Image (tube, rainbow, N blue to C red; front, side):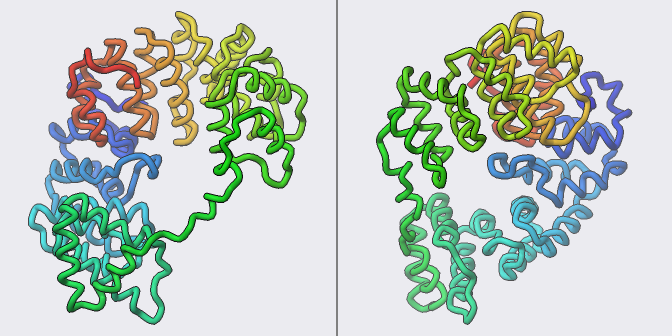
Length: 449
């Protein structure tokens, strides 16, 4: 599906589906389009994106509130969308959309909009959006110390109530740390201490905020205590059926293990049939290349256990071998394109392969499918820098729902000196600040990270 419009003549023919695709991904093409065209045919899509967090990966992607604020300002009736945002904020019941709505409301309130400001405080005070007092950090952004004192008073009242919220120490302390970072530690501490003298609610908040965390139960896990990265230790841990090594330890072990120990794990894997142990062994080769013949890994990609099959594909991404390359080519010829099969090219790409891959790339699919296909396609051209990346990276840029992967695709194009002018213009208005900053840098300074 193509939304980017390199030719101005194509602008009036944007469909609702194309607009939806672009605005929910946060593409800069939306901003360029609305500067020259009437937004009213797309009000439903603008309202949805304004009142929902459309980020694909909410744990690592930035909020798109600033982007949606720019979109709203380009419509003929910003007050209409202001009212929709306020209504949604006051009724939202989940943390993800609440964070987005609070952030967008801050942008609107900074324009002097009292209705939005009142809604921010009302929603925070009600504490009914699914997380402990959502909006804390946004109130600090909006009103500084005065906002901090309001937050401390409201949370302190909850702590002193007959049925207080079951707070984790970090939830109480996070807003204090935010305020110290943005307004200065000394200034924040003085304001809170002075207010706490006469206000028992703020005193209760302050006491809870400086209380140390309870001891973390994970600190006593055997994998966290050991400094033993020998093969013998790993083998013992793999034989403990009730307490297999943690993924974090296996990743650390793989980074630090000597080559002979990596080969010992590979030999064990050849003979292992316990799927739980196989998964653990395979994960060692997410970090280190499998040093033996890859036929066992290729066979495991056909496992009826999808987790084992997936782990085998990931392990093969680091294996450069003619039979792995042939498996990748066979998958393309058969039309079996996915993140898994594309990943086989990472260590086995040869000049001309882009022409085999591009015709097989999907035009639609679930966000997860498109994301992982794009994720590995981008890695292919991060590892194998070539001007052949142009068409694959255009597909990745347009198709991935993830702004972090979109940035990676742009980096690959810039590193190869083939970033299209139309994409450069779009990226200057992208929802991702990091993408906007990336294309503002001199192109000679950009390399694949």
